[in-house]
Length: 259
Length: 255
View 1: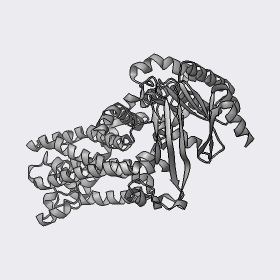
View 2: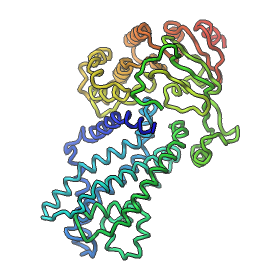
View 3: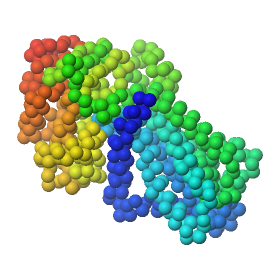
View 4: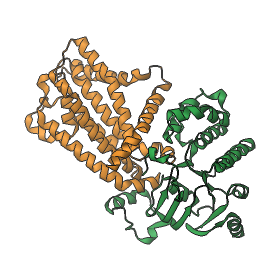
């Protein structure tokens, strides 16, 4: 309860830090916030050319770019948050060492900045859908649920990663590797329904699988692999949050000493 | 852990501004990779054999009344900065506790909150808010902050183009204009030119006159004599002497 009160009090500061980060990121660039979707869009274009044009794929649905884009954006939120969280304390160690704020706001900040970029890029999905004349499914209403599960998951994992990033120097390298594996192991350029059902249990180990499948279901009715992967993701998210709270409390003290 | 909102409370009457009890913190001598698993599994207790950790500060107890000006003395490595950082709440003790009634304005790493990409104006807004000032309060003292830092012509210049003197001036100015009843100062007076130092001194005088509590770490005899009435002498992480500043200075200079 006290942690919740602290969080309410720290929230204005958190909002300010997030705004500062977004401002810093876009302050000197010509394209400004357009960058938050130029990047995923060009990435999606590459995959479109490789898988849809060159390889004449048997994956996913048409329009393939719309099939990929929501998944790609969601993955970028995850990858950006986690790699940012591992560096969140060291990157700003002078700031962490100068202000008396609840320490968990530093990993939360990276998750929130990447969340903002995710939301800023969402209009592109609508734009692409409009270009192809593709209508959303009723599952669009489940979008908040997907965001909630992913946010919970990311907050939990970030709380684990931020002190470990200080204490173990190899964290960023290992994480980069895990995230690369995660990219191919998540239903981003393929869908859960492209994979035989007997492998689903295995793929559901990846908590992003169910979340991404849910995002995609907003645009493609018949790719949705059912609620079991979503449930698995939700369970993993809650578990990550509990674990994050425990690990962060335990490791906050030694991590501060190493800054 | 205090929230930014409770930080601005004034010191309740009859309570010390600052109470430190049996304070201790230990650091590992080893490289950090040996540390992580042990810390995770040991429930925060010190399970390490004695030789693998050392205590930069241990068994330190004292209390400071509101309005007191305390100087902290000691040779390099005696634990002065560690003590200040523990009081500022940016390090957490392994033993004992720090009780701060009211908030602290830490003049430690003062340029830490400033972002090079943002302008002076934007930085003032961000840093003052990080230290718990709201918009209305900032608007009231914005001119005073800019005036004291003497950077009016550079308000809309990115912070990274500031000279190091300007950076410190602006940072000092922002922190000195916070409301916090306790002011922690760590050697920042050593930087800046003569003119700016003189103005910092005036500012600290004014804050002391307004009843703020000062906690000053310095090697400058003159600064300590000028501002402080009481001294704390640290030796090898222990509190060796706590008394009137003249007495403590005498002992410090004799060693």
